[in-house]
Length: 196
Image (tube, rainbow, N blue to C red):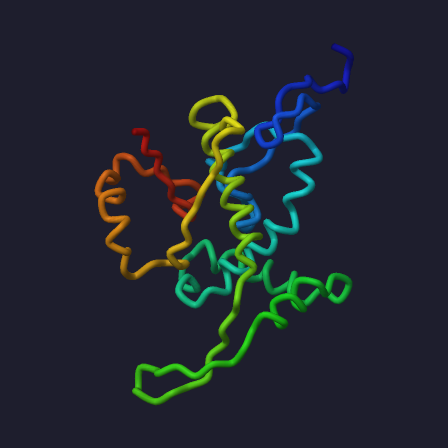
């Protein structure tokens, strides 16, 4: 193989045989620099990898501005990056999207009085595309092969940080214990794998 030529292989996501680069799973943009050393990379073609960036930025922004995660140290590390992306004059699309999907509502505060709060309606298909890709990437990382095209990656969003898990998920969660959970990036991302 000549100098500078990359080996062609199968992309983790589209399955096409192409020259590959690396994709971080979950997206490395969820962390600020310096990036944690334990981030996972999987082989990805340039077309797939380049196509993820806007959804990744949207996902990071939505996760970071959620009220119930603001104190997490990883979120604190990435907030300056989110703030910069929301105030860029040369790229107004993301802030316009967020403002267009935000409304002021009133909710009962800790004092018992109703106070204004921002309610954002997220673009669920964009969030699910990122989650689906993360599932596909983690599958590849764990098993060394693509998730078969006859299968699909599914996620159910319970909320950013669920306070109460619906009863239907109780048996599934009981199957997990701390030994089955994987922690990535200074515990900023946790996942588990169950095989029946």
